[in-house]
Amino acid sequence: MALETLAPETRNLIDGKLVPASNGNTFENVNPATEEVIGTVADGTKDDMLAGVAAARRAFDESDWSTDAAFRAKCIQQLYEGMLAEKEQLRAIVVAEAGASVSLTGFMHVDNPIEMMKYWADLAASYEYETRMSDIEFTGAMHGRILRREAVGVVGAITPWNVPLYLNIAKIGPALAAGCTIVLKPAPDTPWSATHLGKIIAERTDIPPGVINIVASADHLTGEILSSDPRIDLVTFTGSTATGRRIMECAAPTLKKVFLELGGKSANILLDDADIAKIVPSGAMTCVHGGQGCAITTRMLLPRSRYDEGVALLKTAFESWNYGDPTEPQNLQGPQVSKRQQERVLEYIEKGKQEGAKLLVGGGKPDRKGWFVEPTLFVDVDPKSTIAQEEIFGPVLCVIPFDDDDDAVRIANDSMYGLSGAVHSASLDRALSVARRVRTGTISVNGHMWFHADTPFGGYKQSGVGRENGVMGFEEYLETKIIAVPPQG
Ligand code: NAD
Figure 1 (cartoon, rainbow, N blue to C red):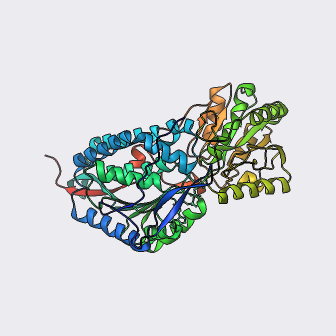
Figure 2 (figure 1 turned 30 degrees about the vertical axis):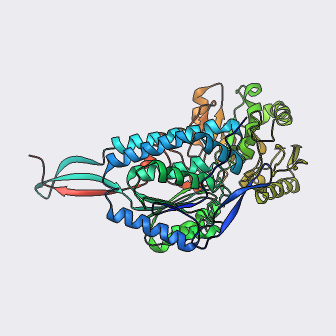
């Protein structure tokens, strides 16, 4: 597929201006499918991050951004239209810097996320920020109450590299809609998916200076300013559970609100009456985007009575799975995002073999340029083993047998994570009964989709704190105020 020529914005957005790093430094952006340097980006310093925080604080405290919902809705609509106008450039960026398969850019990386910005524009305008509660009688007198929702304040947003444009939009959209001001720090592996949004904001919207600041930096720790600075009211983070813990620690001294979207190890459960021949081959979808998706189901639970049948189908599906150049539409799996990630996945595969799981397909890296890992199928996996418990973030499926529905639920829940999952059965009631017992934030029954702009998404247990998307996701960015007033008539 012919992609637009890359023309990304490479400067940060601070206080309404597109600027180089304060010390003039840049860092390289590398295409993970080719290992080629595709350009550079401003290497934001701690001073740049502090300038972004100061600008966001001033914009929140001194402008009417937080109180003028109609103006916000207009600006977010402009941002939506700006992204539509630059959609093909955004697509080229995501394919080049994240190794995203071009076929996945519609649903996962570009088109669908852009549409989500429209949802935030509409919600900013339609949300009822103030409602009247019923009057109450208390200590012999009547009292009235107004329930008011107000922007939390300045938001520090930190995002990972796996679905970078979507995840940036998922932070910026609701925070802007709620009336917050923002400092966004993207992952160093995928900086342009953020800096190019900065260009669209600066050039195509009336969003006032300081309302949104975007600071790319090669140094992960530049982001710690966002979790520790007392001028930040809420830190919203998507990334690994380990970094999520660190963010919570850094946020503790100032007791800022912490909103975390973290890792997963989700189970795909096929009950013994499920249409195994039809459903099992889709287990190869674990390899989509190199398995670099937090909500991908990476454990497949097969009933012992139909285990051999299921494993044979999976073997065929994995052996015929297309992967490679992400610009070729037939490849739903491109590279891992970096050499570091490729090595990490290969280390997990070694660990799986050492711990006794049976490697049925793949397990290595192909002899070609780019940080690819072969689609990898492990069967007979011990549910307590490392590869069944830890998030690999690679194209690796772990197949685990179970005895009955209770056993399937027990294995699915034997995890520190609880982000997503799936269950399949010929009986909707039976599938629903299992779905209700799995401790997870989202679960698909018989292949139905749980993802949408209006649908809350997030994790149980160590998969996160809070919910993204939908009205619930929007309200994460709002404070609640009760105003006591005289009763009505
Ligand atoms: P990561 O935790 O290594 O990094 C994420 C971001 O945090 C990056 O911008 C990084 O620079 C920054 N960072 C790192 N250390 C920091 C610190 N001490 N203080 C502040 N910021 C810091 O994660 P990753 O490897 O980039 O992304 C993969 C992870 O993201 C996986 O675990 C995946 O499951 C998770 N993820 C979760 C969701 C979700 O919605 N639950 C969505 C996508 C990805």
